[in-house]
Image 1 (cartoon, each protein chain N blue to C red):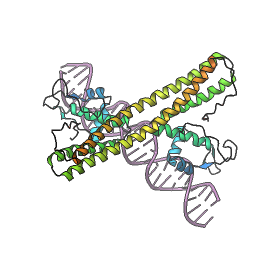
Image 2: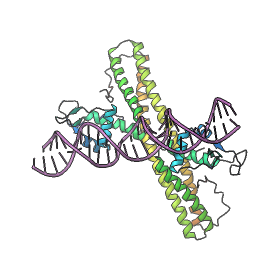
Image 3: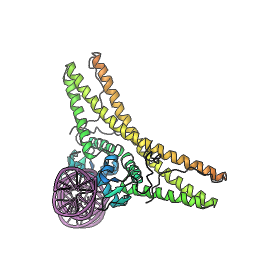
Image 4: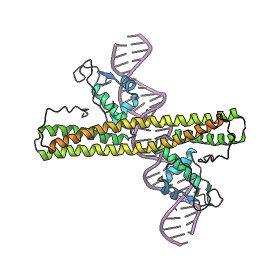
Length: 176
Length: 176
DNA sequence: TCAACTTTAACGTCGCGTCATCGTCC
DNA sequence: TGGACGATGACGCGACGTTAAAGTTG
């Protein structure tokens, strides 16, 4: 289950129906773990404009907005993308959506092929970027686990009452 | 091989020897992929004070400095820690170093045990934090790969000249 | 001497946090 | 009616980028 999945059908009302359940800014924030400031800022950046405004200009968010915000938050927290990069990715998504429409309304096989190839190229770039981050993180984890293992064997030695052998305790000196 | 490892003995001169090869700020930056501004800022924050200054007050970095900077960069880029957190981790490292010294100069088994336990607790916290980030990234990657697979099967269909079946193309709508 | 590099100082940027002041909702 | 919630500024901060003005190096 991920931020990227479509909303697996709301059990109550259809979110696309007019008059569906609209949320105010703080409810959205509490639901998603974002502050009101952040939501307003995202709107300022053009990342997300709430579905509607109340009589007194209160922001009103629908389920599509929540979905999009979850996506944004995922990119920000999980992958550490900048909001500018996220804006790009969202435009990519929008392009994909448009492409799907074009895909359906054309019957030219070459064009269809081009559309899908384009989408594939986008997602491949995303995957590459994500994997690079992941690999570096994995390296860090392994290094830390190595140190942990070292410490644990140290503890085992202590428990066994072993004399401090001329131990090769080489490690980064960092005091300054 | 990681940022966290000690420098496996320099083949040329001993970096700790006085008069060893000292680098100026831009050389360090180019080597590590950091700007001069960043290096000066890190000094301002107290994360790293270069080993020496020239006659005319040029910053001069030695190999230990490079090592420490690589460590800092790793924590920043790979794990996404804030500089404040990195400062903490570096103090942790310094504490570990001091602890190793204390460890060697004490013979009280209880104290030794306490020192190592403390070190282990630190590294466990680090690992936990790193793994949390890694897990979330992995989730993102899987989602993207799922979309890629989807697209590829689409392409295969196109190449086989398949008619556009009433395809369940559900995905996040994001156009606004 | 001179180009390339360095210094400190200071302002700009991004992604928000945090008031302050005012209006809205029920 | 009030008391919680919301709106729009506007300033602050972290982690730098980017001039600007002056000094240093080989």
